[in-house]
Structure formats: C-alpha cells, structure tokens
Image 1 (cartoon, protein in one colour):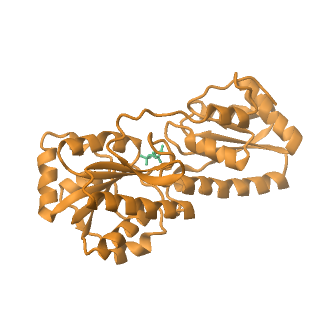
Image 2: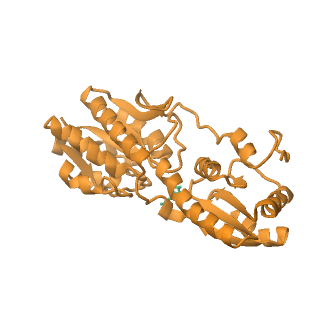
Image 3: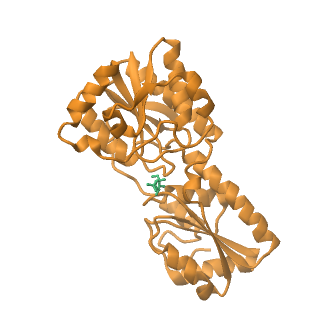
Length: 325
Ligand code: F6P
C-alpha cells in the first residue's frame, strides 16, 4: 500500500525521526512511502517524491523537517478536493500521515474525512498545546534546549551576583512550554499569556530572590503581551540590573532529545499500522504516559489551560493569586 507523509505548519524536533521509522516499517513490508514537499500546497502542485529509509536515515537526529512545510490554506479552495485526489491517484496513494500542531490537526482531518481520504495525524509542535494528547512531538527537545541555555545563565549568575535574568521561550499564544521550562529549571517567576500578574508582586518577588540567592530567574512565554515592558521596567521597579535572553526559533530547530526520538519511533509505528489496518481517521497521541492511537478526529476535544496549581507554586502564590511564600 502506498502512503504519503506531509507537514503542515511549524516544524518540530522529531519529525525527521518519524520519517525514518515510518519509511523503515513500510520498506520491511515492501510498501512505498512518498513525501510531499511544501505541505498541501506542494502536494497539489505535484511536489511528491519517494521517501526511502536510507535517504531519511541521516536526517533522523536533525531538527526541522526534511520535507518542507507550508501554512498556505490551499484546501479551502473550490477545486481542492478534486486536485488532491488527482494527485493521490497519480501516485496510487491510499492514505496520508499528517504532521501538524493544534490548528492543522483540528481543521484539516475533518476535511479529509469528508473527502474519503484516510489520514493519521502526528501532533508535532514544541508548544504542547494539542488538545487530546498529553504530549506533542518536539516539546521535550524544546524544554531540553531551554535548560541548556538556563544552565549557562545560572553559571554566570552565580559568578557575578546581583542581577535578574529573564528568559523568553516560544510557545505561541499558550504557556505550556514556558511553564514546564520554569518548573524544570526552578525559576523564581513564570509569566504566561493565560494568567494576569501584579507588577508590585513581581518586583518584590524578584527583589527577594536576588536578596536571598544572589540572582533571580524569570521565565516567560512569548505570548505574554507585556513582555517588552516587563523587561524594560524591571530595573526601575526593582533597582536591579536585568539581562534578557530570547530563545527564539533556535528553540524550535534544535536536535530531537532521546524522549522525542523514542516517541517518534512509536508514533511512526502507530501511524503505519493504523493505515495498514484500514483506519480512516486517527491521531497518534500520548495518554496515561503511553503512545496510542486515537481513532476518529480531535475536533470535538476542547483545549485546556496550563496547570494553575503549578503556576501558583512556582510563583509562590496562594491559589487565590496572593503571595504565599
Ligand atoms: O507553534 C509553534 C511555534 O514555534 C510557536 O511556538 C511560535 O510562536 C510559532 O510557531 C512561530 O511561527 P513562525 O515560524 O511562523 O514564526
């Protein structure tokens, strides 16, 4: 059975590892795997080629995506169904593996299901914000990337005390990534787009960290609307110097961690088996800590918010949002 892999939206560490493990599983059965370059826009334009395991192997440990992605909303055009099916017929393709974040996995699979095109989704985003899975591919690597940077910040913070360090993570308009990084790194403060904070509380929390430990670490998500003013105003609010670091897209393009490589291998096998078994719509998810197939669409599952209890704990707040320690 011929199948095709394609990436829609932002890349994430681990995508190339899925390509490799999927192509390997298919090759064992003598099945052909194709890849579309440039997402659905590329597929509709015929940018399709065979993806052999030996070609994917050198990419398995590399970030980004060997098959370029696209955010072009070409599937909403009038003739999209007809053009898509013509392309799939051309190569004898009987099913798709779709890599994408929350937006892609929420909107595209329902269309493909309505058009009768079997599709298994792989949730790939460093933001970890796809409803229906505990973990998205790339999240673990993005946390590790941040820890590497924070470890360096901590070393210099210890060597020359008396400063506040601020770190901005990616995460889109959600704070799951920043919260996990702040927790793992033992940050003094975390700011997320989902929760408001009080400036006086923030200033005192940072001052207290510098007083007691010599430095303070504030982690915030890129989606915090006030992030520029926070960094600019902290010296005035606290009387303490600030050193700011932005991880930017380097955090997204880092190498996949062991956990993401292992998850990639599991998700690849789940997606391949599902298409071979005739599943028409599904997503490889993590539930109860284990990779599994979610049969059907994710469309009906509502989004959650970052753990408020953990947010309060890191920030030393009582659950009512007031200072607790
Ligand atoms: O959704 C993944 C993500 O990396 C976000 O963390 C970030 O806000 C966004 O994509 C960046 O998108 P772009 O590559 O279009 O700048």
